[in-house]
Image (cartoon, rainbow, N blue to C red; front, side, top):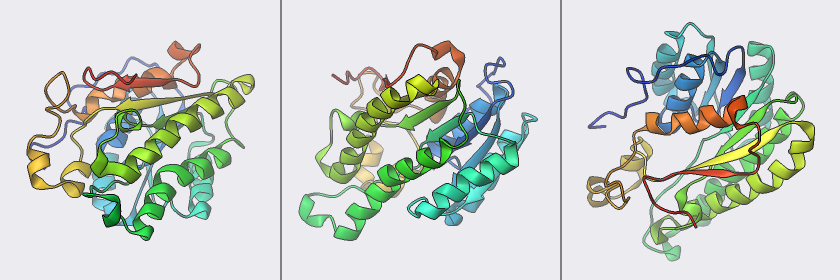
Length: 264
């Protein structure tokens, strides 16, 4: 990508807000997930990132950056559309880190299309299996290990509120994630587990040039009031806040990080 995304390698400074915590970040090999995993590590957490097997080079690069913090970092390849892999991923995290305190459901699939007629049945199902079903399976597996004080953070999107027609399937999954977050947040707060979401606006990640027409890539993010796309590192502080005790009175909420675009 040109320019390369800023994951916070040279800019994010931690201050111990997640000391001793153990985190699992799905889709942590690139984009928002990598920036979040790096920020968590710089705040004192050990981290497991998940990735597709085909994205091993990105995962290795992410691990190298995370390990410079001195924290433990593990990458686990696999397909989150497989419920068995979701369960195995959580088990591996607990085995490697000795427990689980923070789950970030971030992995996602999107592809732009001109209309509903262009969306094949397999792609619709794949989008929901990746973005929504995997979140159900991973959260369910994590609940066997999460203790009071733990946090679940889901990546939603401004697309849940202001959908772009060319991202019909993706936007629908993000709306489901907002609803899931509100519901699970109410279920788990009595157990001392907080569930929240972050709704990014346009973010400069590898997903963009891989899934959008070139002409849209060239102007990507200019529609935001701030006039540009975010860098991944600019999303990380919201996840750190929701993972830390600084957000102890927040549950079932979705935080907008949209460059000024209102969600309501």
